[in-house]
Image (cartoon, rainbow, N blue to C red; front, top):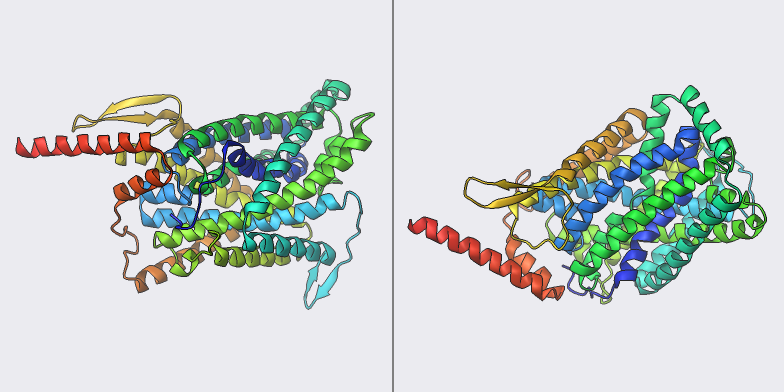
Length: 512
């Protein structure tokens, strides 16, 4: 744990932190998914959302049981060992870096709702920077957000809570008003019928894998678990509420879009699809659209800020766990991992510049995104099952529904999460979709992992630590320290009693 971190995030603060990512994601994913899946966008969002619900159940269990920074990386390390924990962490760091670039570019896209701009390409040697102004504006957003996080995240946390609440109200308002006054079910049916005739499986697989972008905030909640008050109580409430509210909103917004406008119109407004949707609502559209655009600018910038801080917290956690160099663990007096903030703000800026040399920046960055998150989610599901067997003693304030009791040869009982196996199947299908349909993702994602693994082997070799195996670590002592620091004294007592009962049983068997 970070020694200077304080647990000061409440139920609403935890929800707002996750919603800053998930709420922002629909602002950019809507146009991309509609362009790829046409009249079947509602189905793409629905299928991705069902997988997300399973992922959410898994993260809720793990974050409540192990309320520390690290998220999926920490769970994979505890469940599968150091090497696979590092792989999960590297996959998540890729996505956080893309978050910074993707959300900052998308934020400027909503700003252009007010000031439409025609790109003027700039030749840079043999390459072409397709929209230099967009690149420069996105870099300015990253610099500003990096400075805010470097000085301390409390201000951005307060701003995030207000913005998340306002955005949630506004999205609900758009959905309710749109369905009551403008939705045309015959237009939805016509576009669905057309999609069945013209849409290829390749395009649907590509679009449905992009839809997973709309469901990424739970990892951010788990990254902030170490600064959440009473996490065993707060995180289940936060996560379950977020899971279903975001799923319903994503499904409702995509369904509303197809019953309000032809899907082709979103292709012309790819950089601000939510504002385009709001503008099509009769009577109130002229008022709603500018408000939605302003919220899009702010909530997407907040999502980029969340990406910077989550990446910095993750590397600080990996440093503490001997995954990366100790340089990343150093924190300032306010508990901010400042070095990580600087590094990942710079990496996000470099990714913006690189994407600027492609014709469609948003689609390029989104194409890269799904590889890392689907791989990380896959490892989290496997880790959850493994931890049920390796660590049945840690109290789990929340468990995934539908469990099967398995009795081991030593007489102990393990609750096996059946839905975790369904989740492995679902996220595995998305991972295969990414590999088969995302040309950039299947190239850049593995290259990133190979580079990170080479670094890992070099670092571990110089540190005289196992390259593939795990370094000795007292997870039980760490769990006691975590629950004590979180002031979860009831869970702490239950954990100690479970360990004591286990030790007593072992002693009795030895004497027998």
